[in-house]
Structure formats: C-alpha cells, structure tokens
Image (cartoon, rainbow, N blue to C red):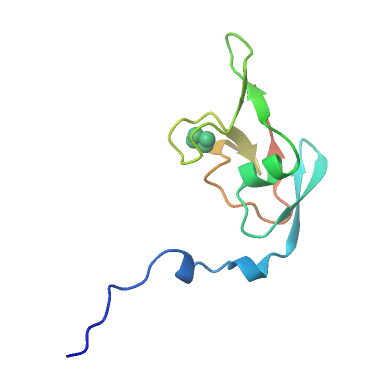
Length: 102
Ligand code: FES
C-alpha cells in the first residue's frame, strides 16, 4: 500500500526560496536600505542595524520587533502610503517606500 503525506504547504511552496536571495533596496524615511528578497520589512530594518523605529505616543519609548509573529503591533510602519503595517508580517519588495512614525 502506498501512502502519501498531506499536501505540502509552507516554505516549499513559497515563491521565494533561500537561494533566490537577490538584493533589494527599500527606502526607509527616504534613505536607501539594502535587503534580500524574502525578508520582511522588519528583517531589512534589523539587518541594517535598527532595533527600534518608532516611539510610543505617551512616553516616547522605543519600539521595534517584540513578538515577531504579528500579535503585538509594536513594529508598525507605513509602507507605500499604507499606514499601520506590521513590519514583521510584510515581505519587503524592491522599491518599497517605508516611513517610520511615532
Ligand atoms: S513584532 Fe509584534 S506584530 Fe510585529
């Protein structure tokens, strides 16, 4: 008897594979930042050495990636004019315009 496993979903079906790591450039607050295809915007920012990119409204405390899985909303940025994008959940694309905000 031949058995087959469940249909594969996830990384094997992802259109961007690790070997496809072409360089991309994202504009962060009008400054070009290099990243690799497949990285999230948070990954591009952290790869450039940024640990935080916004501050809290009341106390001005720094925020960047906290959970990394889309739950905490600490990593919010504006991408191509779309506000409140979770940087840890959005895959960066070449030419994206990212603005950080308080
Ligand atoms: S780091 Fe928590 S939602 Fe992005």
